[in-house]
Amino acid sequence: TDISAFYVPASGLAEENGLKGLANMILVGKLLKETGFSQRETLVRALEKCIPPRKANMLDANLKAIDLGMGQ
Image 1: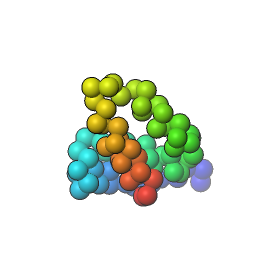
Image 2: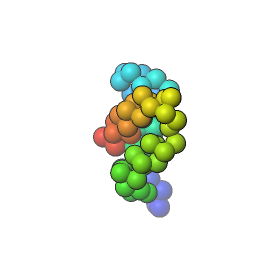
Image 3: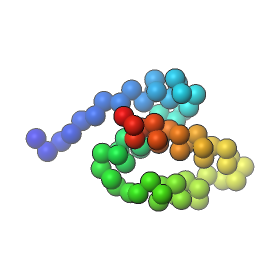
């Protein structure tokens, strides 16, 4: 009774939204929505710090995936 399960078709959502390979970030978004483990702004700053400059274009895709997961 103390466990909640959420079924998110993350791989399909990623593929449908042009985010191939980012199913994990969709799940991070769902986790953020359901648990509130962090504020979204903190997660954005962490991604900005972790994604190297040569892959800066990945920031937008990761944020889109997180937002997609938060909408599930």
